[in-house]
Amino acid sequence: MQTACWAVLYGSFLVGAANFKCLPALFQYLETDLDLDISSLGAAVGLQGVCHVAAVCCFGYITTFISSRMQLLAACAALWSIGTVATATAVSSWDLQISRVIIGLSSGVVGPVSQCLVTEWVKPSQRGKAFGCAVALDSLGQTLAASGIGWLSWKLQSWRPCLLLVATVTAAFSGFSFLTAIQKAAATLALHLFSSTNFKGVRDQEYQNCDPSRFFCFNPGTGYYVH
Image (spheres, one colour):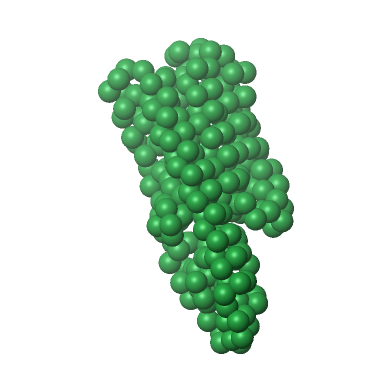
């Protein structure tokens, strides 16, 4: 279960970056097929960026209060897929801008949710490594978007199938994330019920500060994290 959850967390950086950063690699094709100038393409990227900034602030507030953070991440991944399909089927500047608004608004979830999940799952001394892996995968996603999608578009002589491929992979990732989130919620509930009925005395003291939504819970009495 832990492996699947980490796959969702790290995968969100990789898949999210591929959806968010794919547009500049396709500028030459978009200029020809959609009859757009560079200012229109720049406006689409800028609008996506503005929506992303606003979404990060919004999701930062939301993730403070909800416990179903992995479900939220999975839902936003589904929106990435929808936004990329909308980009692949765009026939005008307005279509392109609307599709990038969808991507911009939904991509803002990754930063706040990942910060919360890493803080919950990892001991303080290990968090640097966890965040380092996340940043590395984000960079890899950007590389795939910039080089891989551009190369594949050149190879196929068409940019639309490439984006549809990205959208398909993203949809599969969203489905995997939903299943993992459901299984994690069930396992967390079972752990909570088991600990509340079978652990007494010292174990009750050990679990008193345990949030059921967390993998690792800090016990101030012993000063370590329990699983």
